[in-house]
Image (cartoon, rainbow, N blue to C red; front, side, top):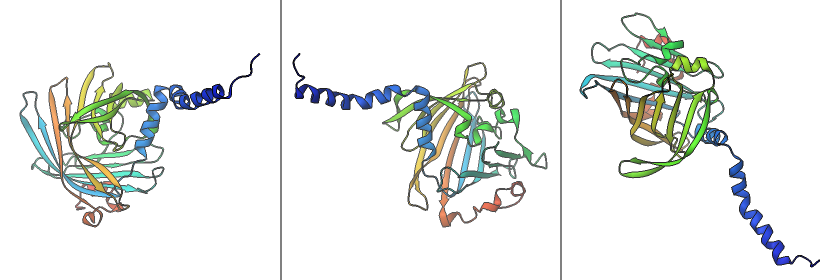
Length: 288
């Protein structure tokens, strides 16, 4: 038997080193890759606090604006520098039109538990907690649901990577990852009225450029499209990509809601955003 030539051994070793990254990626399942992508996005920097104005334009099935609403919004992250501990708090107060003036909503993310979510309608004269099937109800008459307004715990869902894709945005092709998300618990699916959702997400920014939501019958009933975003700097001078415009369509009813955010203030300019205002009592009193 002839001895194996050294050059042949070096060739085999080089081939193994070259193929190693490919064999590793092949071992990763679509579920593992989907989860890994969502974990990377969950670790992206966030703003400590934000104050803004939001305009909601609600269209009927004939494409006519039937409601235009103005909202003051406040957002605060506790422990914003630590992605393993940070929790979002959000408070909104409607101030136009007159019929909506005084209405508001509050969401406080709770670690390892259901979020504390409240709606205040001045006609009810007291805050109402959003629980169970209330999650699938319309948020203030819009095409968004109460559940859409609540933060999502990454551990509540399963993720399946469906492939890499591109999407068009303002004349540019944006590389995105297509991921299917599904609540692990049947009760959560029932409460939110969702069997699954598919998102097209940009990993570096965490921006969802479009999404599809499917009802409990597996029928597509809602789509969301990103219309605009802005890059802000947090206290650590890290970039945070913030949605400033979106469009939600109910494809079954033919209605849609457009959200536009403006007058965004952060840091010292958002001094009215304090940790103590994210309580139900501030749904009925001035905090700004």
